[in-house]
Image (cartoon, rainbow, N blue to C red):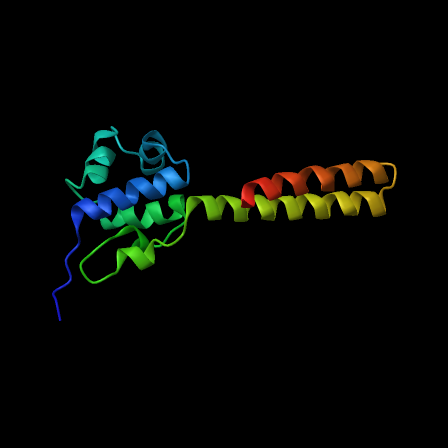
Length: 137
């Protein structure tokens, strides 16, 4: 069994990818953690240093991932761990938004008939159905 070691470069790349996937900027991280400058974050991304445990703990909230998903070491298989694709995540999020909006419109239609017409409801479904088909392919 190998002694567990954190790979600084791969962890830095992983943090950078997670931020890019979630549209989190270096300035966002700086503001969230209360850092005096962005250079610290760039050092993390380049693999020159690691965030402190406190910063990792806070970053998991900002990035919506666990600390173990942020850190890449010699014991975890980074290929299987990073199987999520930004395209798949975006498609899933868009689908969820579409379902939520459709549900909201149906409630409006059935409980407040003056709020939306039947034609408006059908146009919405047709429009977003076409968008979802484009995103899936």
